[in-house]
Image 1 (tube, one colour):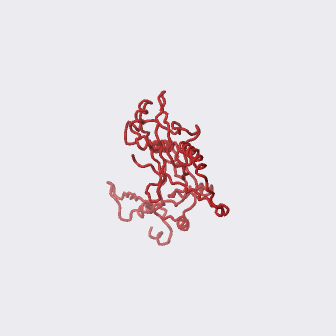
Image 2 (cartoon, helix red, strand yellow):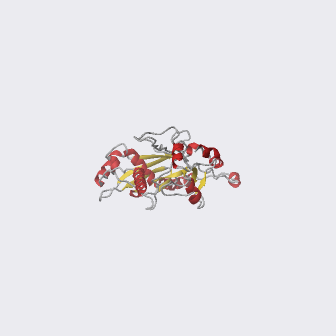
Image 3 (tube, helix red, strand yellow):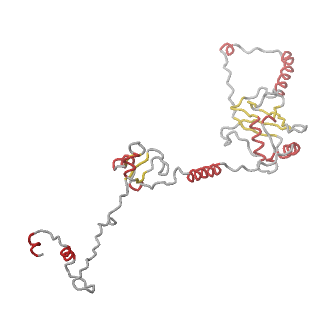
Length: 306
């Protein structure tokens, strides 16, 4: 056996192989010279200590169900990106250059959204949209019961003053230029008899002009309309809970002595109006006084408080 080992050839005898496999001796099993083979377990190299591949960082170029929305940045398997998404232009690799171009950092790397595109996610999105829509719709307050025509008639007569005052800036009247002929022409003397005969007619024309509504009145900037009157009346009644329930609009107000289509006045003066309340009741009559607004006054055209 020794000669065979020295010669360099491997032993072919089974007993020699057994002795080489157990060089530290033999175990006695009751019979002398019996040899038992030692069972040696050989284990492969473990991979547990090696770091696991976390995948590659990508940015989605479109919505992908069970992964995320467009522009989402997260890690994905290299094989999926290389073989599926990148050839189909569904995603792009997030290199350091792309991070700088998009103004992103590593803190912007998110997680895969496994519920995106699923039925549960769609139901939750619909519920959130419905909730947001309900929250955006303001809750309408119950409208107060409108006052009856009889109540409106009583409120207008008792709580609204007889004269409604409005301040407007007058338009300066142009100064008539005297012609050279009138300047050079001497003043004609009139006989006292002729003057006395003409004075009654002049006074009659002046009285008629004064009695005509809006006659010879100075024009104003802007106007006073029926809508202005409605706003003024509602402003007077806003502090009263019962009076604020009246229903009043511009069509119910009419200027007395003017055309039926006239809904505003554009001159200084005093005007009479009628307010129709319905219910076969007599209209409420009030006066509207348009007075000039002084330049030094702090009032800018609003009606003063009663």
